[in-house]
Length: 409
Image 1 (cartoon, rainbow, N blue to C red):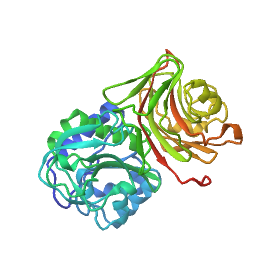
Image 2: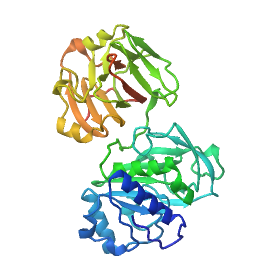
Image 3: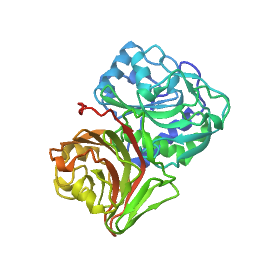
């Protein structure tokens, strides 16, 4: 944890350091805290899985120290920026890209509503769709959305003084030049570090940064919800069993051997994203490319299932195109979060090509050659497998793509 300041100094820095030290004791990582920029040498940085910039301000590293940190990130290191970390090193282009955006201004400390955009990332999975809290809410000189993956944003109508014209990211993550970077704009006040939800937010960001938890941190734009956690309009249950919609916007499978499918329309060329979680050794899947039918076996026999079941045989395990192509198991295993934690699938269909990403890592690439089983019959469904299998889903969203031949990555 690095907390050197060359400009304004936040009086909450000691509380921030203490909070991360306490999180480390319960979270299984050791914490060293320093304000000595001399710690930024290649040899010393290699000791650390992540470096937290705790409300740093101004120019805190010299040229050699900057080069050392750049090498550390490019070698697979990680950065966690807290609050005024965005008010740091304005003339260092690499750092600006790593942090994601620079600070511009802020209104007075006040309550505001945070809209949680990603509820699968470990930094935000514990939160409801909105999060009301008090802090000093930064405006930024640029919007990081096109470059980083936004986890949460501010509802500018909920407070006074926001200047980002309604699209106001406040926490984000990204894979950056070989390393990982997480930033949160919260943490100005001493009280922040006593808030259980904010502490878990910090812990989740650190866990992702050090590789203890996985998430899809690629930029995400242009998606619209098919299921937003509030309504199942357009969806129908086919066959036995059901899905229960919880107050937190989570769909959980129950009983039977059926499927909840999006009946309003099909899709031909698209990127489908959804978040899912198993409770244990559970079985489910995501069906794509099947014609409309109230018979769930029609999807089995005419479409393709992207499997969710980590312990089955390779062609029928998590990430496989069920019965057709196994996932790359090494990549899958590295990308997969364990039962009880959320995962994110991207299922991309272009022509007859079907690709699967798990938490941002491509794990499958399958091309259909059977004209009778065309992926162009593009309905989408999620499976409820059986009475003993409980799998949960959140935030099913889609982006339609140009109807062209499938492109490379």
